[in-house]
Length: 376
Image (cartoon, rainbow, N blue to C red; front, top):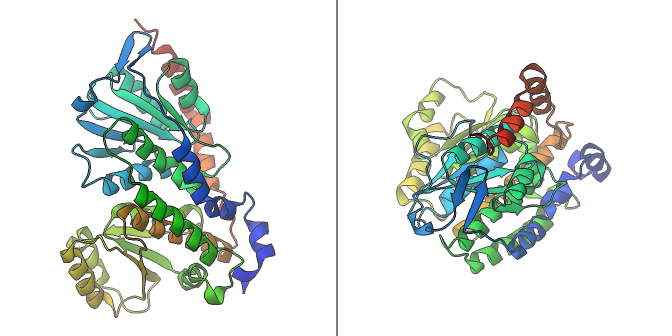
């Protein structure tokens, strides 16, 4: 079996993504040990950013793209019953008009050079928002360090999507430090325990006969996965992993929303079709969502093969991350079956290079950012 050929996996996995994912427990522990500080204010040229009067914060806006943005979606789901203010995920260049000095804006960019995020930094300054950066270097860190804006450094040298905990757990540390919520150590401990248990079950050395991640990857091979989840962040994360790691197309849907549109799309399909359904189930499902899953599967059971993954853990945090961890291993093994390096994203690299060559988008943003503080 190709998935039991460790030499083949090593040859294709040129940047050791399997090892990065294997180390999630250690990455979380490293992040949680970091001592994050927030100043009372920061002077950025003619702009004064105040970090006082935290009780007046009216919303939290997470600015980022790809895995950075998805970390904000996970935060919104995890804290939905704990935060009294909304968490909004923003994936674009221009920030919304409601941003003000009472907005906490967290700019998340693993490289520190994501141009949409740098653009948000510029407009956040103009609106006097409370700015915090997360990244492993680049323009974002350089600017924050220069003007003493709070910045949460994360280890460099990883594939951002393979080191997802580095993008999510700093958010928890920041909000805990700002007394917007309190870390739940029991939830974190259970999550770390599941990482360590699951990586033994899913590691490449574990043969296909006893490795569920390999088995599901084989079932998905050659098909177009459709992913359902009661939490959109889970379905979207898995879709993106299949896109970037496995180099395939996939669809992501959230229930109950899919019951109001997507489900009708199956009516014209026969059993012989290119799709396969991957569903994620959670203890935290609303009772009506559970019923909707049951009925919806009855409707399409003759249309498509269904694979169901039940999230592990008793805490919502551990359930979200156990489901994510499982999906990451599946996507990496599917890359191997597709004879692909899970690390490369050639189309994205080409797009970024062309943006710079044709419009100097990155250069213009950096120039605008550094000229902004001194502008009169």
